[in-house]
Amino acid sequence: MLIKSSAQASLFKLLIFTLIFNAIPLPDYMLVFMPIWILMFLSQWLVINKNEGIYFIALLIGLLIDIQLSDFLGQNSLALIGSLLFINKVKKSFAFSNYTTQQIYIFVASVIYLIIYLGIFIMINGFYVDYWILTVPLINAIIWPLVEIFSNRVIHRSFF
Image (cartoon, helix red, strand yellow):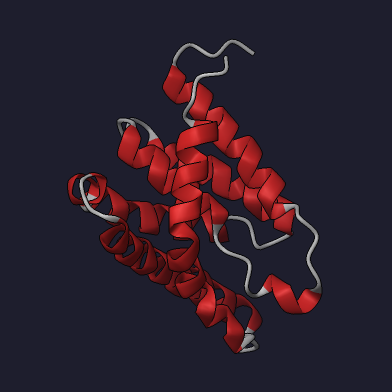
């Protein structure tokens, strides 16, 4: 695989790490608390790089996550695109703000993701939702500083 730029290399590494983090086996009761890794990593990538084709990339990565998690195809893609629209709108403020403001932006993007995801889930499966899933935006906001440090140190450093 020929990777031409550091943005493409970091996107490739982001995809690999996201698929690995999503594949971590957890007990059933812990699955509802699993953070939305792809949203946090793609948000960091979007802030650092240009947004050329980011929505198509979000569509493809969302479909891969849907296949990996055996979800309805397009559910994660649509939620991811909606969240990245918000992150793209606040991109300049996000890049130059402190961790607390970034955590608020990640919280809002996670709420947007969850609303779209649960909206599709409820339309298809009915209103059989584990209410603990509503804590995921808070979990994303809490672990955001660790994700950003990991992302800056491992993913965005050029190894290729």
